[in-house]
Length: 223
Ligand SMILES: O=C(CO)[C@H](O)[C@H](O)COP(=O)(O)O
Ligand SMILES: [Fe+2]
Image (tube, rainbow, N blue to C red; front, side, top):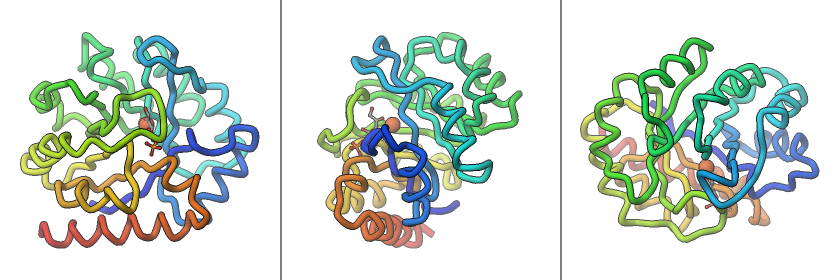
């Protein structure tokens, strides 16, 4: 397991998404976190598979596109996002009735699969699926918008998953910054999404390396 820093392109300049993506990789990003919103599951509209396809063509095959689907019917979009070049599809537990069906459909494309839970969702609902997925995403804001306040009270969910799965990627998303990272890292998160903290900073490189350093520090203490 590694510390992985995944800047959210939601806070980048969408008019030059390709350049923003390459530039943030250059500055140390491990993954590119792509927030897909349908205006229905959440109260905001962002991007769909055509944007992922163009981005993939622009950045080449190597960069890891971590696609966070905040949509009402994720099963419907799996083929499109996989073909567009997603490296991972994370869907919301709350949006799906047959969880196994969508996990299997994502895996059929030989890409990774994550499941996300919103702040009001009980972590125990996610636990039966932990052996079948590559990543658990614990939302630390109400999904829909960047720039919100980190919800520290989500940390017991992270700790519970970490206790059960010492080697599973656990992602936290929402309000992560150099101020809040220690709390998340102590709880056991190792995949760190940060949108505004990275893109609104004058020194994104320093923010990325700081996030990584603190995450790694607490991963070592766990061992
Ligand atoms: O999924 C998201 C919102 O639903 C975003 O990934 C998240 O909000 C990142 O932005 P920030 O770091 O600014 O909170
Ligand atoms: Fe996200």
